Length: 112
Image (cartoon, rainbow, N blue to C red; front, side, top):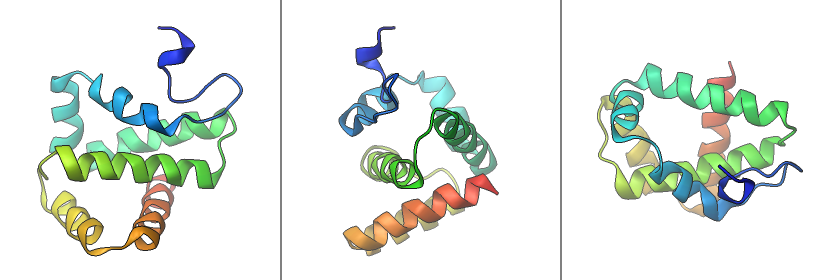
């Protein structure tokens, strides 16, 4: 796959509008496995965050990507467990700034 299809370029810059495209490319079976169990979701997100940190993404870039992913999940995926339902309710209740802080907290949660 060429670099123009990636969310993160070789220079470490993040193209946020490609996050949705990348999420759409995940195999439906794999997506179901990731989202079916909250521990699987956290592990998957944690691995992606570790990779992003290795190439030098800042905490702010990580939170922006997490915010984009959360927005995608809220719009296109049904919650599959109680944790996802709670996250969706928090997402829907929050304003733009609160959603951004929630994204920071999600990143922090999976880093621990």
